[in-house]
Image (cartoon, rainbow, N blue to C red; front, side, top):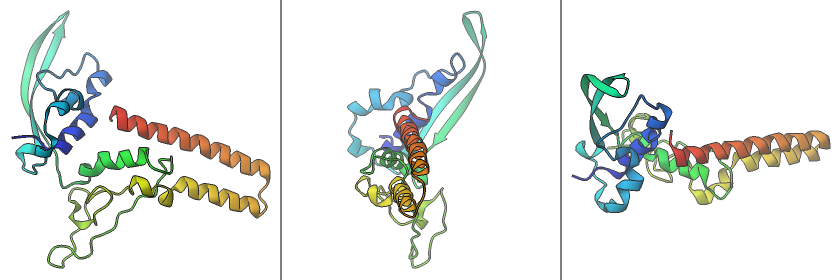
Length: 206
């Protein structure tokens, strides 16, 4: 059975840097999961990677705890690790939301996010609000559990543009030019660094 595409992408995004963060401590062997985009995705039919079954959203690993002596490793203990992706949680839309923050028509990652409740619910009964189960939310730009507006609507929800309008209004009401310039300079620096960090998170993973 083919794995779910969102599960594979999320696992890769969260753990592909683990070996580099913990050198000589963590090693992935006999699995392509941390390199999914490069080594697996080009060779699979993504249309078949949509299953919501438990098996399609589960990865099983054998974790070996090893002791190192010189250049040799000796296995101390062995454990079975089961990683499950909850497709109905907000994590299902996490990567899509990050991408919309990083690249939208406002050119800024400072975007007002929305979380509208689905008041109707199944059989007229509203579902509870939960990050683990998104049935209580209305469908967003990417689906239920998506809170960042579509890329084409970035300007309409841009906190960056809203800030700049407020500063311009303050200037019209008499705020000294030096303070206007300083406010814009500091904010532009923050805005630039923030979107750079968001884009790094999108491209490099957690």
